[in-house]
Image (cartoon, rainbow, N blue to C red; front, side):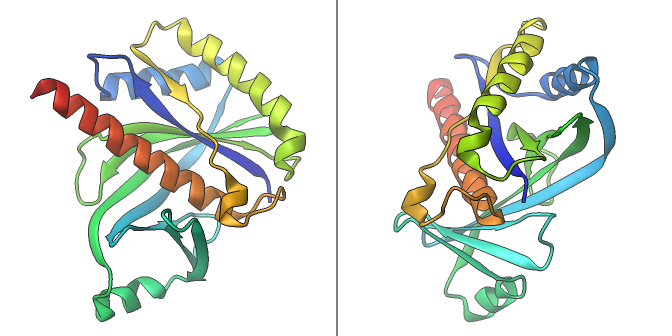
Length: 209
């Protein structure tokens, strides 16, 4: 399957994410000739104890469980969510929706949107997913993905927004994942982004207090 990078918006010190930044970022995609294709949504759930679950639209019948402490990622049928709730072995601590629009830019697809709690419109973060369609090898695509992000960051910088998109690549080998990209790679990236978003929110709250 095509390779993806998942990025999150890191606000500058003293600033927070807001809907105006999201609007500016979306306009930025269109300014570099991104063709809007429609809405897109993924869901990530944080369970106790220390487990994350991810559903992604390209695999609607699958659910991915990530146990970050042991570096384990499991692919299961989507019905596993119901089973977990009935067993009460894992309790939902937090569920986040990644919701936005998809754009086409040549061989790239961009998905830009907000991160908000399920059943709430409160903005917790901004994310971007960059997908390069021709290649599924992470190593082969690394250079062209990096070059694309440089072009993107330059376009964003012209708007003087208080922050930037950050790409933190997990160590996929620790999860037993190879160079050939799969939906499990996507799930691990979303779990990593969620951890970063939670850390950012906590840092802002500690400064305010």
